[in-house]
Length: 466
Ligand SMILES: CC(C)[C@H](C(=O)O)[C@@H](O)C(=O)O
Ligand code: SF4
Image (cartoon, rainbow, N blue to C red; front, top):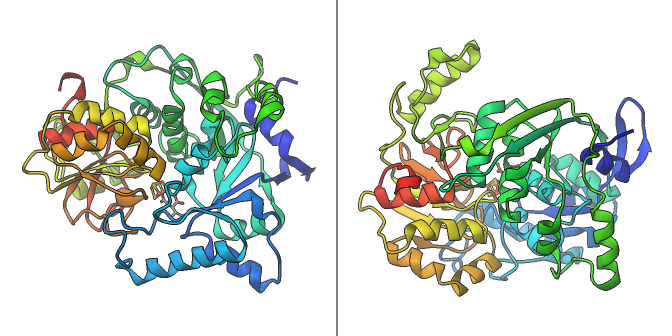
């Protein structure tokens, strides 16, 4: 029977079929950060169990760390505790661990791929919802809860219910001024935040295949915001080229064997999907969110919708609340909306290509006087080094942007990088939930180019003619 890529990944990792689409699944890789791992390590200890495979874990601090004054003690005692706990556990279990200041340190979803820890065909989990990012490699990456973290540590397996298959095909060619972020925001705008519920989404089509690995990671990263359990893109030459030579990538004869196997990782021609969605990339306009859910998205040339335009009464009610929280009114133009802060970073948009995209807009210009702070936060120490080798840091600093150390930063209010109440942020992150970037903060999700342009103009502009 014809199989989808997800079917193949499921079958490859099925240890035991428990019937009714439930299976015991082998987990190849486990990424660990300071927020969701302490309970797992503690539980393991309490139960008197050992780590099943220490070599299957890569540990890194990212959420709770500051991105400046990193030589000073962490200002938040709770964060300091979590970080110390991670370090202690990493040492105790002799894990591959990249502490702050190590160039290999960064956001889990950036460093996994960078180190060749993320490979096509593997199952890769993390106590973190954006683990879908790794699907860009044709890896089955998904987020797990704290008790599952412990289960994986102890057994290297999970009992899972098989998800349904969904395919999002993006036809055509992406217009100039748009990037992967605009594609994925447009997809979420179309399918809604529940559109992928119960499904694994495979992204396919010429516009997806044309993306770099960085772009593919941006798309898969946000699969979860469309409700999906995971996002996938079949590996191809672009994937192999990215992976080749990385620290944990197979070498020599093993590389050739691996590539031969990876070439089989695609949906069969006649595979049937439970749900299919098709989009035309050439119709995509730079996207911007207006509300408090990633599905609340419009083209930059659009207006804030009226709550009355939603058929679903719950959606209508949440739109009223969102407009109130965001201090926007129905019919208002997105163009020209004034901003207070810029955040370029997060596991969605902090890779080298994202920084190049921002730099190309920023070059030779200055941050608007009205902007309180504009920060650019590389996803890892290696991204930072690469950006500096290309001189991007100079472009940012000369323009008045703050060039930071790697971490999750202003993506969420778990470290010193927060926006104040009522402040409007042009942000390249993935969630615009109420209070996400600090209590009362107002987030607008955009691409790196759009965020950079907003910083220069002091307001949202259409980067296509900026
Ligand atoms: C802190 C962590 C558990 C959380 C997640 O699971 O995604 C965070 O990374 C986020 O993006 O909200
Ligand atoms: S960058 Fe944001 S979305 Fe990504 S792992 Fe960190 S907090 Fe979560």
